Length: 110
Image (tube, rainbow, N blue to C red; front, side, top):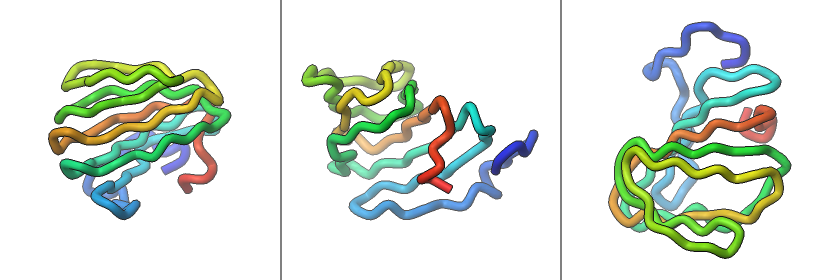
């Protein structure tokens, strides 16, 4: 919902990414994007990279993240910084929600 001041969760279209992951693109501008990802237990965010800087906030659940070859388990309240083009991915250990902030926005998500 580009340049929309108020984005209500009920209005953000859920996008089934398959394999137990649902994405909702929330508020964004050309320079910044907020995205919610809901994971079922066992769902995998495959290793990947992109030219965007990304901060991930764990809203709920438990995840094993790999960032630049280092693996750590994260839980609600933890954050991770992924600089542009760093390889990263995760496995959901306990169903939960991740909130991703991207700079610039992910054109491939809209």
